[in-house]
Every structure is written in structure tokens, then in C-alpha cells.
Image 1 (cartoon, helix red, strand yellow):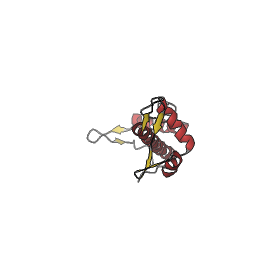
Image 2 (cartoon, helix red, strand yellow):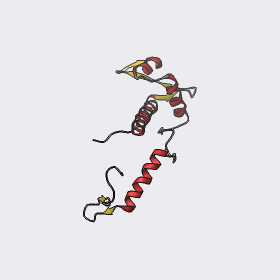
Image 3 (tube, helix red, strand yellow):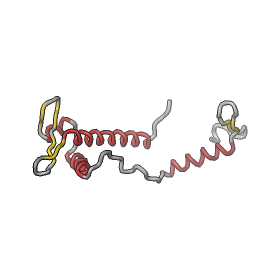
Image 4 (cartoon, rainbow, N blue to C red):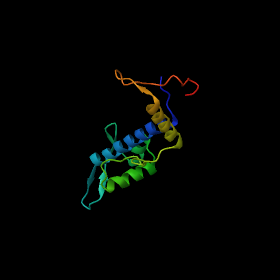
Length: 129
């Protein structure tokens, strides 16, 4: 069984948050229209009934500040919201150590031609690794 690291959990939570924000952005695109004075009017529905914005936020467990940010992106014309760290190239020192270790194993290991596996040399023991 694979154990999840803290980074794995944070990544999954960020994915869920981005998906949730995109759901609300899509909802605003579908339920908003411009009125005669060119202002956006949005109808908020909960179980098929029109409700006020505060009730809709409460029903969807959405913070007012988060909604304000999504609303701002919606008014700016955004179609998809991405996580703020998307595209960052920096990695933690632990990740860099793991990558270096794996590259070392690739360099000194015996590559198996039939299954793509890598066997470590016999000079290594479990405690060395």
C-alpha cells in the first residue's frame, strides 16, 4: 500500500479546490445575464428555487471572500480558474534529494531487458538504501 506524503495530500486538496472554484465559475456563466443598464444579474438556485446570494453561499458552503474573488475573475472574462501555483518550477529540498537518489539508482542499477525493471548491484544491502 502506498503511503501518501503531505505534498500528495496538499496537491489533492488544491485539485479539489480548483475544481470547486471552476464549478462556481461555470455556474455564474450559466446563470448570469446582462440587464438593460448592462449590469450582470445572476439567479441563484437551490433545489430548483430562486434564493438570495447569501442563502446560496450558505447552501454551497462557500466563503463570501472566495465568492468575491471568483466573481471578480468572472467579470474579467475568465473561463477556467487554475491553482495559483500552477506552472511553478520550484521543488522542495526533500523532493530534490529523492530525485537525486533515483537518478543514482538508475545510473548504477542493472537494467532488465525483458521487463524494464532495475536490479541493484549486490554490494548494496537494505540498510544501505
